[in-house]
Image (cartoon, rainbow, N blue to C red):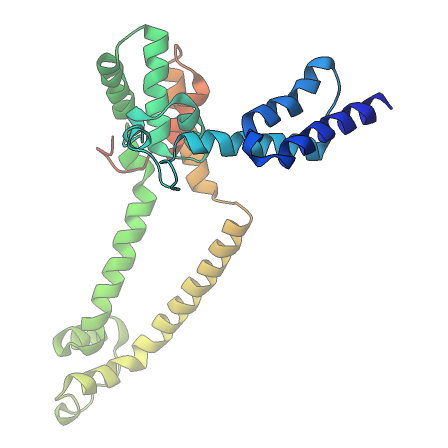
Length: 267
């Protein structure tokens, strides 16, 4: 009953302020709504929502040009253009979204706090951490590089192995030993390809089907959040970096390491 009486009284005073638009003040009305909390009286969800929206509208009007819904020059001057200009809360939010540059800036500020260094000296420490994080990166990324080189080489070699007369003849002599057609049937590139396709079709077709199946498996693994080798190697690198710098926050170091690419010199 006490809550109902307080809420009714509050809404009655709000209604009276709405009745005279000249005297209506969003800030005063919002303070009126929120003042009941000091008397240990819980406001209804609707009343709280109205008060919150009213305060947000009032604060937004302070940043807008008079009579217009455009920001003031003073607001534009405060727009952060780099990660160094952002406040800590924004950096933490971006870091939680796996933003590597935000995690890097957050780690620099953590170094400043722990070592009591200025920004320039903390950046030098961060540079060394980045270099240490790239240790053994060539070995860790070797399976990816081998895969890229193998598939790229196969793609390039497939053309001469199918259409180049001398290479097709050599490959047939070494690996196939099929009957060679008469010279008049091998005068053009397409005729050579027609002959070579007799033995090129089975392996190329089979490899294409295998790759298609592997892509389907990879797609389903991504749906399940499974990246066994990638996550395993990233976790090893992150733990190694965190163990090397025990004075700094372990989670910040691991987060930075996990979003760092496998390419050298990306710091």
